[in-house]
Image 1 (spheres, rainbow, N blue to C red):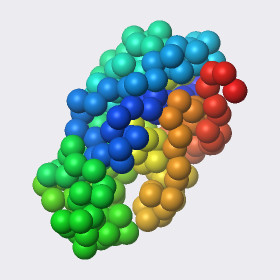
Image 2 (image 1 turned 180 degrees about the vertical axis):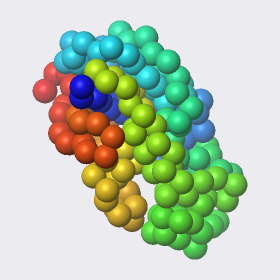
Image 3 (image 1 turned 90 degrees about the vertical axis):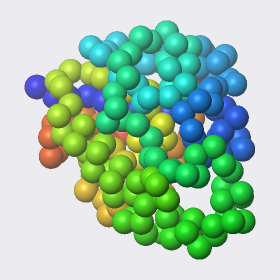
Length: 187
């Protein structure tokens, strides 16, 4: 049987608006958009969530109850957590540039793009049969797509993942088909 995954990034919130490295505590400020998108999601056998307040809040606004799954944690930005991209660029510009261009370079006290792609890829390859809705951070959507399509990890930052869209994968371990970025809700 086939596994079907619907990956939904959270509604917009302060961390995204401020280009702030996510620290797990920021929530969403557009629950109405998530509530209006609730009817656009298919029935699912299970719902899983990235750890963090905004994925839990988005799932709640979508009317979903899910299980927090550690393998679906966002890319760990280490000591940059909670700081804006501009702040880090001003004080650690060379390290930030390297992190954004070298998939093997880990943020200080954090993880590399390659590491998050491997972690999320391991989860993907054990995806159960049937449909799963995953309310996950944008970088988890990126990592899933990179792994599913066997893309080079340096494409990670070139994948745009808008809030409240559905990226759908169907298949089974080692063979995935992709449907990108269906808008949820009022559009």
